[in-house]
Length: 596
Image (cartoon, rainbow, N blue to C red; front, side, top):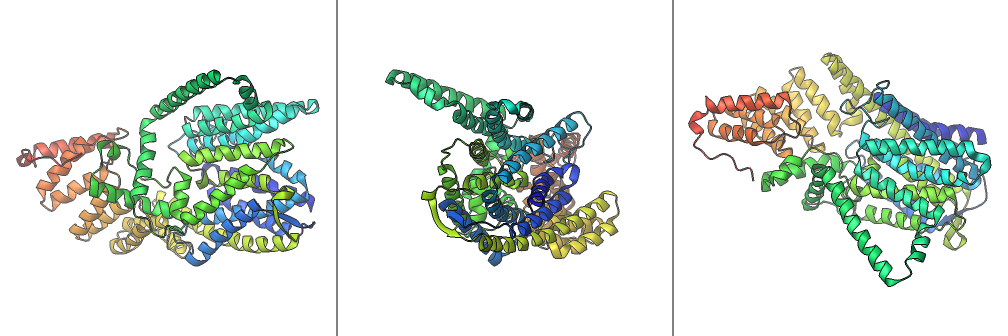
């Protein structure tokens, strides 16, 4: 059994790393298979009573809350993320008993994390030298995660743990080879974190690493010893405050538009009317609703020029606490906060390099939670769960609330976990059909694409992204009314601006000009900096002889500053200039549309 668990843990922790170059479905399917194997093996792990701490009780209540919400609300948006979240939490309850049974499993998990980091390093260098492709063609670097920000975020979370192991093995003269391997790993991770230009990853890595260095070098105690006078304390505090403001100002200005964009997202979310504030809208709701909130904001208020420039379609809040509030409500946010409180309250009396590393990783994750989207990345979410498991697996006697039999605890979590993983695999098959359909679309084989999209409908009839692709394929085949029906449903389950562009085109094809205009306007207000929706709107207005309004929108296109200048944008602006000079010359004396 011990060897079987070793193999399963290896497969579980490495499987998420093979999602490189578009192998997301295969990677997640393997993860689910190994999760099933571990859940089954846990049933055969025997031992004495399992001591349940306050932190473990908080986790149990939170998972029960998520499970009950899923049972009553269902998967409102047919989103795979809900299965990832629940699977990871049920795996938490399998890590606890096996860590209690044999501490070598805990050590193995930490070393498998190092192996996973090395895999990502290999992928990173392979992509830099052009030997390995990236799943996102927009970026050269991204490891198995596709995006350099997510890639650096993963390294910033893992690096503090590896640093803790490295400093621990440095003291062991018999483990020089392991120390050197860990040192090289830290060095390469630092390299990729720096070149990623992800400020969130920089800060997360810094805070996590400082915690580890303080644990091993007692930096805080040395500083306190040096600052034994009031004058020294005041001088150092003043310098620290000035430096802190200076650093944050530099980081803000480094990517000012990106930073302002995050602030704008938070502003829109806080201004939006929130339904079900106690239990939230359901996992996946932010991606489905945010675009509508942004569209309403610009339609009502117009927004400032800066806001219109930075606004874009986003699928996450870039603040996990805000997103948890939207999707899981005040109850979910409160329970998560309680779990984190008990995790940081965990005392490390023996200065364990595993516990200090896990706590440092948790610090890095929380820093990322404030400015990024670590909980949207399965690899980082699993690292979050592993960190909590390391901190909670062996509570102090004073922290225990009750004792429970190993078998009873394992039976409950295994049965419920297997149910969730099975439903996750069912959902993944829908992703497989969707991906196959997309491949046929790219090959211009629309008929076969529609066959696969139709097969995926029972799995994804509430998934806005799938409905968009299905509706788009129907439009390509000339089945406009069917496409409208599917896309109207997509618009209720997603806020992708392109849904409204295709809807507008469909309505235009079937002669419903007013509906087409409303769809184009929705796309325009969703992302005001994009020219193409405005361009389509001008064409529609010209065809319907509404030249006064066409003139105003043509002027708006010329006044719009695009984020990334392209040939297509230049062509559209040239066409609008030509249109104003010729067909719309009679409207030159009219006031242009307000842009402030």
